[in-house]
Image 1 (cartoon, rainbow, N blue to C red):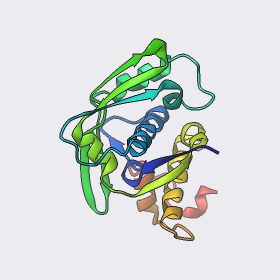
Image 2 (cartoon, one colour):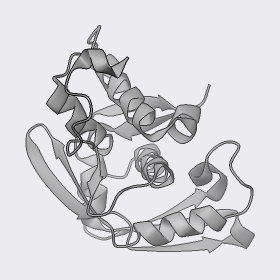
Image 3 (cartoon, rainbow, N blue to C red):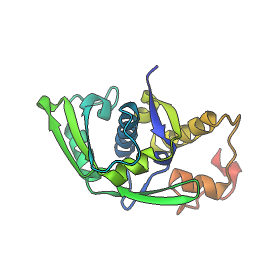
Image 4 (cartoon, rainbow, N blue to C red):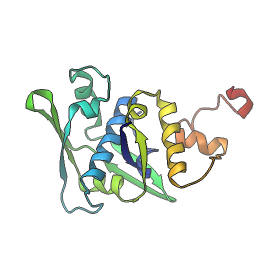
Length: 183
């Protein structure tokens, strides 16, 4: 079973525009690459990452890069915000991208603030690659939140309804005011 390491701060990303499931998966993969390459949280200059496009697209995705190009185009200049340990952060995570080597590699430029946003917490969650790419959006976020709790060695997770709505990015929705209605 393949796994990627994702920063706790990257689990509950928010953006000025809605993030598609493909965008969230790609950002998680970028965070995992930063971890694998041991890029420090504080870098003086932007960092170029060379990533296989199959990794960004996910397992069993279309073999061409049509949707990946669309995803990278939407992510370029997108401002993301988040919370970590009570502190707010914001950054542009993708400044520039190129698909090279006949479509097999993607070169992505991550600005220093983006690297810091994805690397600063020092707490990383192991997420199954299949879950990161194939689960529906809210199931994917809940899976990642539960994996983060497991990493913290907490035997169970307990969130208030408003807190869970915020973590799942649906804090503006009020369709389930009572937990029993979720069933």
